[in-house]
Length: 100
Image (cartoon, rainbow, N blue to C red; front, side, top):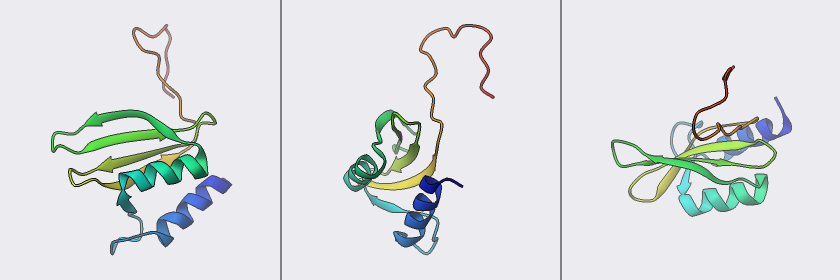
């Protein structure tokens, strides 16, 4: 695991606000501020779920990324995080295009 992975894992355990030690939830503004300050991540993509929540990816120029989901009350929870984020070209990709 990389240093970022260990740091994120430690943060998830230390900042947990529910009985599940793997879930980290805060107001969206805190997530965006902290991820920007600590990992240079900014909002990259988002979408609206059928239940009205917003799913969002924040990523950095170095490839780190974090996915959060935000409820209608403004509470965001970390869903996943990792490295090697890549943008898929908009429009018809050149062939062959492989995800893996």
